[in-house]
Length: 346
Figure 1 (tube, rainbow, N blue to C red):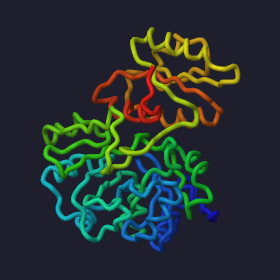
Figure 2: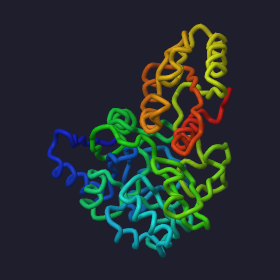
Figure 3: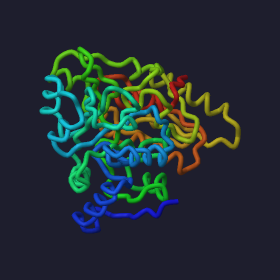
């Protein structure tokens, strides 16, 4: 067990808290910090020994690459061989923000960060605490989501306290994250560029800036690459403790399937239904919870991981989620739901 220091950015002095956390990073420690997407678990990206502590704390497979976070564009040049023209255009449009760009790595980036790949994933977060921490540490910070590997990503401070107390040197506590899903990941080494993971920046927004892109089949299908260029492509991710399935069909068909499945559960089962504002009234059995309104995909995306964590806290044994109609705005939400359910559908 590690003695974990807690800094509450809403009540403690901000600059002093950031400075202390920056010292932890600089001396090879690991720190949980807020970003606009989800909470991150960070270490000095240029220190292979420090990066190894991230994998240990999360229980993360060593062949799952990390994203390197920067606080200015000059830092990017130390991490990559060159910034492609289309990457520059995306950076101008969406950085700082929830977009990760994969480019050919420089020799300075440790193999542990990239899982031995010839590429590195880079992000310039917009959250002021994240950028301040990188500045205070004086180095780019490698950081996956701050959860036990495979569990729903943390969007609230209570989530990181549950998963990371005693495993990290410090935690910067702040308000709930804004986006609630991890960043969009674009592979800029292919032509056209390929979206490997959808997130807060949609495919439509990307194409409006650089034209046509490819979508990785891994986004909506259970396709497992031999080598993953991006987090979220290879291993089980975002899974709640209860068995989760996704119901497909019309509203009435989904409700009938879920109702029938719940009737067939053993008496000691504790089922939950993840519905929408528009469909909650179709159910009479189980714990019925809304993901949000179909008219507000951003809120549904923001709520997903928190809802799954709530089900865990309530001891839910079976989760029946309604599939959300696929669109540019719901692609990231569906991607996370499919993976959380292990691509199990009814």
